[in-house]
Length: 533
Image (tube, rainbow, N blue to C red):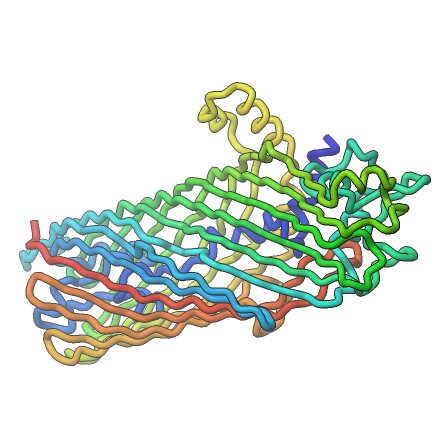
Protein backbone atom coordinates (compact mmCIF):
# COMPACT_ATOMS: atom_id res chain seq x y z
CA UNK A 1 0.00 0.00 0.00
CA UNK A 2 2.84 2.41 0.73
CA UNK A 3 4.11 1.93 -2.82
CA UNK A 4 0.68 2.77 -4.16
CA UNK A 5 0.49 5.88 -1.98
CA UNK A 6 3.92 7.01 -3.08
CA UNK A 7 3.10 6.30 -6.71
CA UNK A 8 -0.04 8.37 -6.35
CA UNK A 9 2.05 11.19 -4.91
CA UNK A 10 4.11 10.97 -8.07
CA UNK A 11 0.98 11.18 -10.22
CA UNK A 12 -0.35 14.19 -8.33
CA UNK A 13 2.65 16.49 -8.76
CA UNK A 14 0.93 19.28 -10.71
CA UNK A 15 4.14 20.97 -11.70
CA UNK A 16 6.52 18.02 -11.40
CA UNK A 17 7.89 17.02 -14.77
CA UNK A 18 7.56 13.34 -14.00
CA UNK A 19 3.90 13.06 -13.21
CA UNK A 20 1.12 14.89 -14.92
CA UNK A 21 -1.93 12.67 -14.91
CA UNK A 22 -4.37 15.53 -14.48
CA UNK A 23 -2.60 17.55 -17.18
CA UNK A 24 -2.52 14.61 -19.58
CA UNK A 25 -6.28 14.96 -19.97
CA UNK A 26 -5.54 17.85 -22.33
CA UNK A 27 -3.80 15.49 -24.78
CA UNK A 28 -7.16 13.90 -25.64
CA UNK A 29 -9.58 16.73 -24.99
CA UNK A 30 -7.97 19.87 -26.44
CA UNK A 31 -8.64 19.41 -30.16
CA UNK A 32 -7.82 21.24 -33.40
CA UNK A 33 -10.37 19.82 -35.95
CA UNK A 34 -8.28 20.88 -38.96
CA UNK A 35 -8.53 17.61 -40.88
CA UNK A 36 -8.60 18.68 -44.52
CA UNK A 37 -6.70 21.51 -46.16
CA UNK A 38 -9.91 23.48 -46.77
CA UNK A 39 -10.86 23.26 -43.08
CA UNK A 40 -7.28 24.09 -42.08
CA UNK A 41 -7.25 27.16 -44.31
CA UNK A 42 -10.42 28.38 -42.57
CA UNK A 43 -8.72 28.28 -39.17
CA UNK A 44 -10.01 24.80 -38.35
CA UNK A 45 -13.57 26.00 -38.49
CA UNK A 46 -16.71 24.40 -39.81
CA UNK A 47 -17.06 24.44 -43.59
CA UNK A 48 -20.69 25.28 -44.37
CA UNK A 49 -22.56 24.31 -47.52
CA UNK A 50 -20.95 25.69 -50.64
CA UNK A 51 -23.62 24.75 -53.15
CA UNK A 52 -25.18 28.17 -52.85
CA UNK A 53 -22.07 29.67 -54.42
CA UNK A 54 -23.22 28.27 -57.73
CA UNK A 55 -21.75 26.43 -60.66
CA UNK A 56 -19.58 23.37 -60.54
CA UNK A 57 -17.76 24.83 -57.56
CA UNK A 58 -20.52 23.75 -55.25
CA UNK A 59 -20.67 20.19 -56.46
CA UNK A 60 -18.90 18.96 -53.33
CA UNK A 61 -21.49 20.50 -51.06
CA UNK A 62 -19.42 20.06 -47.90
CA UNK A 63 -16.11 18.97 -46.41
CA UNK A 64 -15.47 15.47 -45.10
CA UNK A 65 -13.54 16.58 -42.01
CA UNK A 66 -16.22 19.15 -41.09
CA UNK A 67 -18.63 16.57 -39.68
CA UNK A 68 -16.17 15.99 -36.83
CA UNK A 69 -17.29 19.41 -35.67
CA UNK A 70 -20.92 19.47 -36.84
CA UNK A 71 -22.35 16.07 -37.87
CA UNK A 72 -25.06 17.79 -39.93
CA UNK A 73 -22.36 18.53 -42.51
CA UNK A 74 -22.75 14.99 -43.87
CA UNK A 75 -26.30 15.85 -44.91
CA UNK A 76 -25.05 18.74 -47.07
CA UNK A 77 -23.33 16.57 -49.67
CA UNK A 78 -25.04 16.30 -53.07
CA UNK A 79 -22.49 14.01 -54.68
CA UNK A 80 -20.48 11.07 -53.48
CA UNK A 81 -16.79 11.77 -53.05
CA UNK A 82 -13.51 10.48 -51.64
CA UNK A 83 -10.64 12.57 -50.26
CA UNK A 84 -7.18 12.18 -48.77
CA UNK A 85 -5.19 14.77 -46.84
CA UNK A 86 -1.49 14.62 -46.05
CA UNK A 87 0.20 16.89 -43.52
CA UNK A 88 3.77 18.13 -43.14
CA UNK A 89 4.22 19.34 -39.57
CA UNK A 90 6.97 21.62 -38.20
CA UNK A 91 6.93 22.05 -34.41
CA UNK A 92 9.27 24.17 -32.33
CA UNK A 93 9.95 25.29 -28.77
CA UNK A 94 12.00 28.23 -27.49
CA UNK A 95 13.01 28.28 -23.84
CA UNK A 96 15.54 30.98 -22.98
CA UNK A 97 18.61 30.44 -25.15
CA UNK A 98 17.61 26.90 -26.16
CA UNK A 99 15.59 25.98 -29.26
CA UNK A 100 14.25 22.58 -30.30
CA UNK A 101 12.49 21.65 -33.55
CA UNK A 102 10.77 18.58 -34.99
CA UNK A 103 9.50 17.73 -38.49
CA UNK A 104 6.90 15.01 -39.05
CA UNK A 105 4.69 13.63 -41.80
CA UNK A 106 1.10 12.88 -40.78
CA UNK A 107 -2.26 11.80 -42.15
CA UNK A 108 -4.77 14.63 -41.84
CA UNK A 109 -7.94 12.90 -42.99
CA UNK A 110 -9.03 10.16 -45.35
CA UNK A 111 -12.59 9.18 -46.13
CA UNK A 112 -15.57 9.25 -48.38
CA UNK A 113 -19.29 9.91 -48.66
CA UNK A 114 -22.01 7.84 -50.30
CA UNK A 115 -24.64 10.36 -51.31
CA UNK A 116 -28.25 9.41 -51.73
CA UNK A 117 -29.34 12.95 -52.57
CA UNK A 118 -32.75 13.12 -54.24
CA UNK A 119 -33.32 15.87 -56.79
CA UNK A 120 -37.08 15.29 -56.98
CA UNK A 121 -38.73 18.62 -56.16
CA UNK A 122 -41.86 16.81 -54.93
CA UNK A 123 -39.91 15.12 -52.15
CA UNK A 124 -39.36 17.11 -48.94
CA UNK A 125 -36.67 14.79 -47.65
CA UNK A 126 -33.72 14.85 -50.00
CA UNK A 127 -32.34 11.42 -49.24
CA UNK A 128 -29.74 10.10 -46.84
CA UNK A 129 -25.94 10.34 -46.93
CA UNK A 130 -23.51 7.94 -45.29
CA UNK A 131 -19.91 8.89 -44.57
CA UNK A 132 -16.75 7.22 -43.30
CA UNK A 133 -13.53 8.95 -42.34
CA UNK A 134 -10.35 8.85 -40.32
CA UNK A 135 -9.16 12.22 -39.00
CA UNK A 136 -6.29 13.38 -36.81
CA UNK A 137 -8.02 15.44 -34.13
CA UNK A 138 -4.80 16.53 -32.46
CA UNK A 139 -1.08 15.88 -32.58
CA UNK A 140 1.32 16.14 -29.71
CA UNK A 141 4.72 16.36 -31.39
CA UNK A 142 7.33 18.27 -29.51
CA UNK A 143 11.00 18.46 -28.66
CA UNK A 144 11.75 20.67 -25.68
CA UNK A 145 15.06 21.78 -24.17
CA UNK A 146 15.25 23.83 -20.97
CA UNK A 147 18.16 24.94 -18.78
CA UNK A 148 18.72 26.70 -15.46
CA UNK A 149 22.08 27.98 -14.22
CA UNK A 150 23.06 28.33 -10.54
CA UNK A 151 19.87 26.88 -9.13
CA UNK A 152 19.41 27.44 -5.35
CA UNK A 153 17.39 24.22 -5.09
CA UNK A 154 17.66 20.69 -6.44
CA UNK A 155 15.25 17.90 -7.33
CA UNK A 156 17.07 15.93 -4.66
CA UNK A 157 15.63 18.38 -2.11
CA UNK A 158 12.11 17.33 -3.16
CA UNK A 159 12.96 13.66 -2.77
CA UNK A 160 14.61 14.28 0.62
CA UNK A 161 11.29 15.68 1.81
CA UNK A 162 9.34 12.79 0.26
CA UNK A 163 11.65 10.20 1.86
CA UNK A 164 11.36 11.28 5.50
CA UNK A 165 9.63 8.72 7.69
CA UNK A 166 10.33 5.77 5.41
CA UNK A 167 12.95 3.07 5.64
CA UNK A 168 15.23 2.65 2.61
CA UNK A 169 13.40 -0.50 1.44
CA UNK A 170 10.07 1.39 1.63
CA UNK A 171 11.08 4.21 -0.72
CA UNK A 172 9.24 4.84 -3.97
CA UNK A 173 10.58 2.57 -6.69
CA UNK A 174 10.35 5.36 -9.28
CA UNK A 175 11.70 8.40 -7.51
CA UNK A 176 13.18 8.36 -4.05
CA UNK A 177 14.31 4.74 -4.25
CA UNK A 178 16.60 5.07 -7.31
CA UNK A 179 17.97 8.34 -5.91
CA UNK A 180 18.90 6.54 -2.69
CA UNK A 181 20.32 3.52 -4.50
CA UNK A 182 22.60 5.76 -6.56
CA UNK A 183 23.91 7.68 -3.51
CA UNK A 184 22.11 10.94 -4.22
CA UNK A 185 20.24 10.56 -0.93
CA UNK A 186 21.64 9.23 2.34
CA UNK A 187 20.61 8.80 5.98
CA UNK A 188 22.41 10.22 9.00
CA UNK A 189 22.72 8.54 12.38
CA UNK A 190 19.20 9.75 13.25
CA UNK A 191 17.75 8.08 10.14
CA UNK A 192 17.00 11.49 8.64
CA UNK A 193 17.51 11.82 4.87
CA UNK A 194 19.84 14.34 3.23
CA UNK A 195 20.95 15.25 -0.27
CA UNK A 196 24.52 14.73 -1.43
CA UNK A 197 24.33 18.35 -2.63
CA UNK A 198 23.39 19.59 0.83
CA UNK A 199 25.72 21.83 2.86
CA UNK A 200 24.78 22.98 6.38
CA UNK A 201 21.19 21.98 5.86
CA UNK A 202 20.74 23.87 2.57
CA UNK A 203 21.52 23.30 -1.09
CA UNK A 204 23.82 26.07 -2.25
CA UNK A 205 23.83 27.57 -5.75
CA UNK A 206 26.18 24.96 -7.09
CA UNK A 207 23.83 23.20 -9.49
CA UNK A 208 23.06 23.67 -13.19
CA UNK A 209 19.88 21.96 -14.39
CA UNK A 210 18.97 20.67 -17.83
CA UNK A 211 15.89 18.97 -19.20
CA UNK A 212 15.10 17.52 -22.62
CA UNK A 213 11.69 16.13 -23.55
CA UNK A 214 10.99 14.22 -26.74
CA UNK A 215 7.33 13.56 -27.25
CA UNK A 216 5.26 12.17 -30.09
CA UNK A 217 1.59 11.40 -29.94
CA UNK A 218 -1.70 11.69 -31.70
CA UNK A 219 -5.44 11.48 -31.23
CA UNK A 220 -7.24 10.00 -34.21
CA UNK A 221 -10.88 9.24 -34.82
CA UNK A 222 -12.64 6.84 -37.14
CA UNK A 223 -16.15 8.12 -37.70
CA UNK A 224 -19.33 6.69 -39.14
CA UNK A 225 -21.60 9.55 -40.10
CA UNK A 226 -25.17 9.69 -41.28
CA UNK A 227 -27.17 12.74 -42.35
CA UNK A 228 -30.28 13.86 -44.14
CA UNK A 229 -31.66 16.97 -45.81
CA UNK A 230 -35.14 18.44 -45.46
CA UNK A 231 -36.19 20.79 -48.30
CA UNK A 232 -32.57 21.97 -48.69
CA UNK A 233 -33.20 24.08 -45.60
CA UNK A 234 -32.68 21.79 -42.61
CA UNK A 235 -29.77 19.36 -42.35
CA UNK A 236 -29.52 16.76 -39.58
CA UNK A 237 -26.66 14.44 -38.78
CA UNK A 238 -25.14 12.08 -36.25
CA UNK A 239 -21.62 10.68 -35.92
CA UNK A 240 -20.41 7.64 -34.03
CA UNK A 241 -16.74 8.19 -33.27
CA UNK A 242 -14.15 5.60 -32.29
CA UNK A 243 -10.95 7.25 -31.08
CA UNK A 244 -7.39 6.04 -30.68
CA UNK A 245 -4.77 7.88 -28.72
CA UNK A 246 -1.09 7.20 -28.35
CA UNK A 247 1.59 9.25 -26.67
CA UNK A 248 5.24 8.41 -26.11
CA UNK A 249 7.43 10.68 -24.02
CA UNK A 250 11.11 10.41 -23.16
CA UNK A 251 12.46 12.76 -20.49
CA UNK A 252 16.08 13.40 -19.64
CA UNK A 253 16.62 15.53 -16.55
CA UNK A 254 20.12 16.18 -15.27
CA UNK A 255 21.82 18.24 -12.58
CA UNK A 256 25.46 19.17 -12.92
CA UNK A 257 27.52 20.17 -9.91
CA UNK A 258 29.69 23.20 -10.55
CA UNK A 259 33.44 23.01 -10.05
CA UNK A 260 33.38 24.80 -6.69
CA UNK A 261 30.71 22.53 -5.24
CA UNK A 262 32.00 20.73 -2.08
CA UNK A 263 30.42 17.48 -3.22
CA UNK A 264 31.53 14.19 -4.63
CA UNK A 265 28.91 14.55 -7.35
CA UNK A 266 29.93 15.34 -10.89
CA UNK A 267 26.41 15.04 -12.39
CA UNK A 268 23.42 12.74 -12.48
CA UNK A 269 20.79 11.88 -15.09
CA UNK A 270 17.19 11.02 -14.37
CA UNK A 271 15.59 9.33 -17.37
CA UNK A 272 11.92 8.56 -17.70
CA UNK A 273 9.96 6.78 -20.39
CA UNK A 274 6.21 7.26 -20.37
CA UNK A 275 3.70 5.72 -22.76
CA UNK A 276 -0.04 6.23 -22.97
CA UNK A 277 -2.39 4.41 -25.29
CA UNK A 278 -6.11 3.91 -25.33
CA UNK A 279 -9.37 3.62 -27.23
CA UNK A 280 -12.62 5.47 -26.74
CA UNK A 281 -16.11 5.92 -28.13
CA UNK A 282 -18.42 8.91 -28.42
CA UNK A 283 -21.54 10.27 -30.09
CA UNK A 284 -22.04 13.63 -31.82
CA UNK A 285 -25.30 15.27 -32.93
CA UNK A 286 -25.79 18.35 -35.07
CA UNK A 287 -28.04 20.44 -37.28
CA UNK A 288 -27.75 23.18 -39.90
CA UNK A 289 -30.62 25.47 -40.77
CA UNK A 290 -30.88 27.82 -43.73
CA UNK A 291 -33.60 30.43 -42.93
CA UNK A 292 -32.79 32.40 -46.09
CA UNK A 293 -30.53 31.46 -49.02
CA UNK A 294 -27.63 33.58 -47.77
CA UNK A 295 -27.50 32.45 -44.12
CA UNK A 296 -26.50 29.17 -42.48
CA UNK A 297 -27.06 28.53 -38.76
CA UNK A 298 -25.57 25.47 -37.12
CA UNK A 299 -25.47 23.82 -33.69
CA UNK A 300 -23.83 20.66 -32.42
CA UNK A 301 -23.17 18.80 -29.22
CA UNK A 302 -20.40 16.30 -28.58
CA UNK A 303 -21.07 13.85 -25.79
CA UNK A 304 -18.02 12.86 -23.68
CA UNK A 305 -15.60 10.29 -25.03
CA UNK A 306 -15.06 7.34 -22.71
CA UNK A 307 -11.52 5.98 -22.97
CA UNK A 308 -9.92 2.84 -21.66
CA UNK A 309 -6.31 3.89 -21.11
CA UNK A 310 -3.11 1.98 -20.44
CA UNK A 311 -0.21 3.83 -18.80
CA UNK A 312 3.37 2.57 -18.72
CA UNK A 313 6.21 4.21 -16.79
CA UNK A 314 9.92 3.38 -16.55
CA UNK A 315 12.55 5.32 -14.62
CA UNK A 316 16.31 5.07 -14.32
CA UNK A 317 19.00 7.12 -12.59
CA UNK A 318 22.66 7.38 -13.59
CA UNK A 319 25.00 9.07 -11.12
CA UNK A 320 28.58 10.08 -11.89
CA UNK A 321 31.06 11.05 -9.20
CA UNK A 322 34.34 12.91 -9.20
CA UNK A 323 37.44 11.22 -7.78
CA UNK A 324 36.58 11.11 -4.10
CA UNK A 325 38.63 13.28 -1.79
CA UNK A 326 36.17 13.51 1.07
CA UNK A 327 34.23 10.25 1.34
CA UNK A 328 32.56 11.21 4.61
CA UNK A 329 29.33 12.31 2.90
CA UNK A 330 26.74 9.61 2.56
CA UNK A 331 28.85 6.45 2.12
CA UNK A 332 32.23 5.15 3.22
CA UNK A 333 35.38 5.37 1.15
CA UNK A 334 35.37 1.75 0.08
CA UNK A 335 32.02 2.05 -1.71
CA UNK A 336 33.15 5.11 -3.62
CA UNK A 337 36.43 3.53 -4.66
CA UNK A 338 34.66 0.64 -6.37
CA UNK A 339 33.55 2.88 -9.17
CA UNK A 340 32.98 6.53 -9.87
CA UNK A 341 29.65 5.66 -11.49
CA UNK A 342 26.42 4.46 -9.90
CA UNK A 343 23.38 3.20 -11.73
CA UNK A 344 19.86 2.52 -10.49
CA UNK A 345 16.76 1.51 -12.40
CA UNK A 346 13.42 -0.21 -12.20
CA UNK A 347 13.36 -2.66 -15.09
CA UNK A 348 9.82 -3.94 -14.64
CA UNK A 349 7.61 -1.08 -15.94
CA UNK A 350 4.82 0.27 -13.82
CA UNK A 351 1.71 -0.46 -15.87
CA UNK A 352 -1.85 0.32 -14.91
CA UNK A 353 -5.24 0.91 -16.52
CA UNK A 354 -7.87 3.58 -16.08
CA UNK A 355 -11.15 4.74 -17.59
CA UNK A 356 -11.12 8.38 -18.63
CA UNK A 357 -14.07 10.65 -19.41
CA UNK A 358 -13.30 13.69 -21.55
CA UNK A 359 -15.31 16.94 -21.38
CA UNK A 360 -18.49 17.38 -23.35
CA UNK A 361 -18.58 20.31 -25.77
CA UNK A 362 -21.11 22.43 -27.62
CA UNK A 363 -20.89 24.44 -30.85
CA UNK A 364 -22.74 27.29 -32.52
CA UNK A 365 -21.91 27.95 -36.17
CA UNK A 366 -22.89 30.87 -38.41
CA UNK A 367 -22.26 31.13 -42.14
CA UNK A 368 -22.96 33.84 -44.67
CA UNK A 369 -22.88 33.43 -48.46
CA UNK A 370 -22.58 36.70 -50.39
CA UNK A 371 -23.64 36.23 -53.96
CA UNK A 372 -21.56 33.79 -55.96
CA UNK A 373 -18.15 34.77 -54.68
CA UNK A 374 -17.76 35.15 -50.90
CA UNK A 375 -18.47 32.88 -47.94
CA UNK A 376 -17.94 33.78 -44.27
CA UNK A 377 -17.95 31.39 -41.35
CA UNK A 378 -17.80 31.93 -37.56
CA UNK A 379 -17.75 29.09 -35.00
CA UNK A 380 -18.11 29.26 -31.23
CA UNK A 381 -17.13 26.33 -29.01
CA UNK A 382 -17.83 25.78 -25.31
CA UNK A 383 -15.74 23.19 -23.43
CA UNK A 384 -15.75 22.58 -19.68
CA UNK A 385 -12.43 20.87 -18.92
CA UNK A 386 -13.29 20.50 -15.24
CA UNK A 387 -15.88 17.87 -16.30
CA UNK A 388 -13.13 15.38 -17.16
CA UNK A 389 -12.83 12.40 -14.85
CA UNK A 390 -10.74 9.31 -14.10
CA UNK A 391 -12.31 6.06 -12.91
CA UNK A 392 -11.17 2.59 -12.03
CA UNK A 393 -11.35 0.31 -15.04
CA UNK A 394 -14.06 -2.25 -15.56
CA UNK A 395 -13.11 -5.81 -14.65
CA UNK A 396 -13.55 -7.21 -18.16
CA UNK A 397 -10.70 -5.20 -19.71
CA UNK A 398 -8.10 -7.31 -17.89
CA UNK A 399 -9.03 -10.20 -20.13
CA UNK A 400 -6.79 -8.77 -22.85
CA UNK A 401 -3.71 -9.80 -20.86
CA UNK A 402 -3.09 -13.49 -21.41
CA UNK A 403 -0.30 -13.85 -18.88
CA UNK A 404 -1.94 -14.45 -15.49
CA UNK A 405 0.93 -12.91 -13.51
CA UNK A 406 0.93 -9.77 -15.66
CA UNK A 407 -2.87 -9.55 -15.49
CA UNK A 408 -2.92 -9.89 -11.71
CA UNK A 409 -0.21 -7.26 -11.27
CA UNK A 410 -1.95 -4.72 -13.53
CA UNK A 411 -5.31 -5.50 -11.96
CA UNK A 412 -4.01 -5.05 -8.40
CA UNK A 413 -2.43 -1.68 -9.11
CA UNK A 414 -5.28 -0.39 -11.30
CA UNK A 415 -7.97 -1.30 -8.78
CA UNK A 416 -5.99 -0.02 -5.79
CA UNK A 417 -5.26 3.51 -6.94
CA UNK A 418 -7.67 6.10 -5.57
CA UNK A 419 -8.57 8.53 -8.35
CA UNK A 420 -10.53 10.94 -6.14
CA UNK A 421 -7.47 13.17 -5.49
CA UNK A 422 -6.75 13.33 -9.22
CA UNK A 423 -10.37 14.27 -9.98
CA UNK A 424 -10.28 16.95 -7.28
CA UNK A 425 -7.11 18.28 -8.90
CA UNK A 426 -8.91 18.40 -12.27
CA UNK A 427 -11.83 20.35 -10.78
CA UNK A 428 -9.49 22.78 -9.03
CA UNK A 429 -7.18 23.26 -12.03
CA UNK A 430 -9.58 23.62 -14.95
CA UNK A 431 -12.48 25.79 -16.03
CA UNK A 432 -14.97 26.20 -18.89
CA UNK A 433 -13.51 27.81 -22.00
CA UNK A 434 -14.94 29.78 -24.90
CA UNK A 435 -13.16 29.20 -28.20
CA UNK A 436 -13.59 31.05 -31.46
CA UNK A 437 -12.80 30.27 -35.10
CA UNK A 438 -13.51 32.44 -38.12
CA UNK A 439 -12.81 32.01 -41.82
CA UNK A 440 -13.50 33.50 -45.24
CA UNK A 441 -13.51 31.98 -48.71
CA UNK A 442 -13.41 34.02 -51.92
CA UNK A 443 -14.26 32.44 -55.25
CA UNK A 444 -11.91 33.93 -57.85
CA UNK A 445 -13.51 32.01 -60.74
CA UNK A 446 -15.18 28.66 -61.31
CA UNK A 447 -11.88 26.88 -60.69
CA UNK A 448 -10.01 28.79 -57.99
CA UNK A 449 -10.88 29.82 -54.42
CA UNK A 450 -8.81 31.63 -51.81
CA UNK A 451 -9.25 31.06 -48.08
CA UNK A 452 -8.08 32.56 -44.80
CA UNK A 453 -8.89 31.99 -41.14
CA UNK A 454 -8.16 32.73 -37.50
CA UNK A 455 -8.71 30.76 -34.30
CA UNK A 456 -8.37 31.40 -30.58
CA UNK A 457 -8.53 28.75 -27.85
CA UNK A 458 -8.67 30.01 -24.29
CA UNK A 459 -6.45 28.61 -21.58
CA UNK A 460 -8.14 25.71 -19.75
CA UNK A 461 -6.49 26.68 -16.44
CA UNK A 462 -8.46 28.61 -13.81
CA UNK A 463 -5.67 30.75 -12.45
CA UNK A 464 -3.57 31.25 -15.57
CA UNK A 465 -1.93 34.50 -16.57
CA UNK A 466 -4.05 36.15 -19.26
CA UNK A 467 -1.58 35.52 -22.07
CA UNK A 468 -0.49 32.00 -21.07
CA UNK A 469 -1.65 28.71 -22.63
CA UNK A 470 -3.87 30.38 -25.21
CA UNK A 471 -3.54 28.90 -28.68
CA UNK A 472 -3.61 31.36 -31.58
CA UNK A 473 -4.18 29.99 -35.07
CA UNK A 474 -3.52 31.77 -38.37
CA UNK A 475 -4.25 30.06 -41.68
CA UNK A 476 -4.54 30.57 -45.41
CA UNK A 477 -4.91 28.45 -48.51
CA UNK A 478 -6.07 27.90 -52.05
CA UNK A 479 -8.62 25.51 -53.55
CA UNK A 480 -8.89 24.12 -57.09
CA UNK A 481 -11.93 22.41 -58.58
CA UNK A 482 -11.58 20.94 -62.09
CA UNK A 483 -14.39 18.68 -63.22
CA UNK A 484 -14.46 15.52 -61.16
CA UNK A 485 -11.23 16.36 -59.37
CA UNK A 486 -10.54 18.87 -56.62
CA UNK A 487 -7.53 19.83 -54.52
CA UNK A 488 -6.78 22.14 -51.61
CA UNK A 489 -3.53 23.47 -50.19
CA UNK A 490 -3.25 25.27 -46.84
CA UNK A 491 -0.74 26.69 -44.40
CA UNK A 492 -1.52 26.87 -40.67
CA UNK A 493 0.50 28.39 -37.85
CA UNK A 494 -0.36 27.90 -34.18
CA UNK A 495 1.33 29.79 -31.39
CA UNK A 496 1.24 29.65 -27.58
CA UNK A 497 3.41 30.53 -24.61
CA UNK A 498 3.60 29.64 -20.93
CA UNK A 499 5.86 29.37 -17.91
CA UNK A 500 6.93 26.09 -16.39
CA UNK A 501 9.31 24.88 -13.72
CA UNK A 502 10.99 21.55 -13.17
CA UNK A 503 9.41 21.01 -9.74
CA UNK A 504 7.27 22.82 -7.19
CA UNK A 505 6.42 20.89 -4.05
CA UNK A 506 6.31 21.70 -0.31
CA UNK A 507 7.80 25.12 -0.94
CA UNK A 508 10.75 23.69 -2.90
CA UNK A 509 10.47 25.52 -6.20
CA UNK A 510 12.64 25.55 -9.27
CA UNK A 511 13.26 28.65 -11.32
CA UNK A 512 10.44 29.59 -13.71
CA UNK A 513 11.13 29.14 -17.40
CA UNK A 514 9.41 31.03 -20.23
CA UNK A 515 8.43 28.84 -23.18
CA UNK A 516 7.19 29.71 -26.67
CA UNK A 517 5.61 26.98 -28.80
CA UNK A 518 4.98 27.11 -32.54
CA UNK A 519 3.28 24.52 -34.70
CA UNK A 520 3.27 24.95 -38.48
CA UNK A 521 1.47 22.69 -40.94
CA UNK A 522 1.21 22.38 -44.69
CA UNK A 523 -1.88 20.39 -45.70
CA UNK A 524 -2.60 18.97 -49.13
CA UNK A 525 -6.00 17.48 -49.95
CA UNK A 526 -6.86 15.65 -53.15
CA UNK A 527 -10.28 14.28 -53.94
CA UNK A 528 -12.64 12.88 -56.51
CA UNK A 529 -16.35 13.59 -57.06
CA UNK A 530 -18.53 10.62 -57.88
CA UNK A 531 -22.04 10.75 -59.24
CA UNK A 532 -24.91 10.36 -56.81
CA UNK A 533 -26.34 6.94 -56.06
